[in-house]
Image (tube, rainbow, N blue to C red; front, top):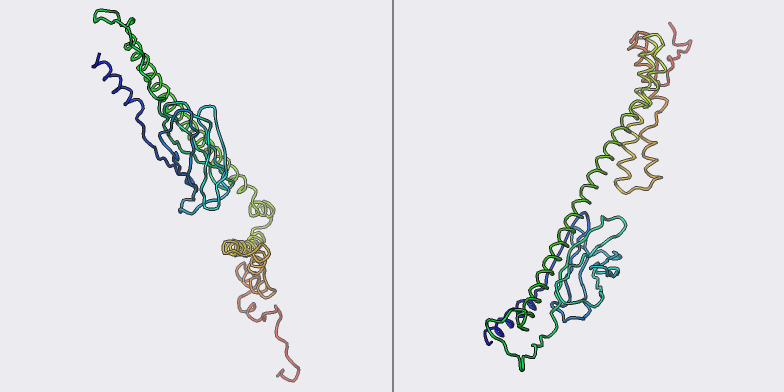
Amino acid sequence: MNTSVGLVILLLAIVVSSSMTFASAATGSLVIKGFPQKSPLDSGEIPVIVGRVTDSAGKPVAGVSVTAVVGEDQASTVSGTDGSFKISLAPANSGKHYTNVIAAKDGFEEVSTIIVYNVKEPAFIPPDFTGVQTLVQDSLTNNPLSEYLVKQMDASRNLQEEEQKKLQEIEQSKVNIDEQRKLAKAELEKDLRAFNAESTLNSARKSFEAFVIDMDGYVRGIFLDQFGFTEQKTMAGKEAKTKALESGASSKEAMKAFQKKASSTRGDVISYNTYLNAKHGFAHPTLQNSFDSEGKLPRYNNDTLP
């Protein structure tokens, strides 16, 4: 009998032992860390999860919606100015509890982490063996101590099976989410490729080339060169606008930067047309050089004529 009682005490010591689990998870630009404020708890106590939300650089993020889900129970709160949060859950039964803590805020990817806390078994009250006559050859079903040990072992096994099932469900959920993200990314890349291909077919250059396709070759060459001149100016303007926006300029300032680079002066147009006349054989280079920056031939006074 002393050996049996010792076995009961050893088994219960193993069942009620617990440890505090610290967990963290990071993805995207948010990092959430948390842990149970107290572990293990006594059966029926209210578990409290505390933690902190930061960005990937370790700076606290305020206003993050934090939700703790354990079984069918859940509770939510919002992180403070220092990124900290504190959530009280429903009273817990004995055993190990897996809590999924989710952090979400506009502009950030939703992240989650698993936090585990333990709840001790109620205080053990040994059964009353007064007057019970037990013999070694008796059936185990007639031994109250043996029946109690069998029940405890069954309960422990069931608890382990439930924990394993929950872990498998969590892992499968993560796999499904990853697969959905991969599919969404593949669809987005496909749409972008189609959009770029369509944009290329409908570009301004393609449209202009279709417009001059039936013109004589020398005329078409001048038109295409003039279009190229305007196209280069426009690209320079877009580049200047992008750089202005990236440096923190306002939309109005960026548009001014675009106009400055994309615009052409009268002198620019005259100079380029002079070049095109010589390039395409409409005028001899020496004759073209006789024109001034305003596109005019120099004037001579009668007094200066020989």
